[in-house]
Length: 151
Image 1 (cartoon, rainbow, N blue to C red):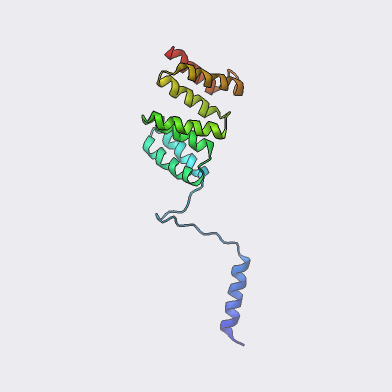
Image 2: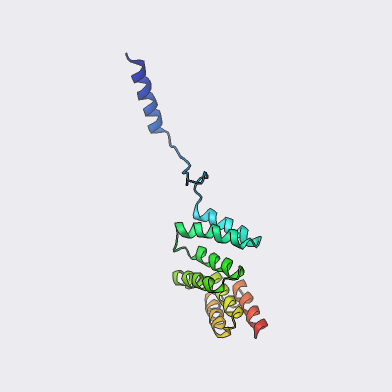
């Protein structure tokens, strides 16, 4: 009997019955990361006020999932905090188009409107938050405080 043939068949059978997972090389030498992991990384970067790093991470997340409301909201937040208010507004609006009751996007878009002096639009976001989560949720309280401070 041919030992090489038997060995090859045994190896093939073993490989076929063994679940395998491989890291996918994205060309940069690192394994691909899930959008969920990218959002977690971006949140940590935002907490550390590393706006440019967060924007870079969120670009990757949005390349993978352009219709992710959380990623769009966080991109808007990072852009706003880095001073790019006009681009930030577009990401907030997309997040709200995808998820009109998104508490974070409503709050942050309202805060952007406060920053640019459009208090009527900020108050509209506050009304949406009141409908979504009442006057006791953190997003409502934060936006209300920003409006009160500006007005």
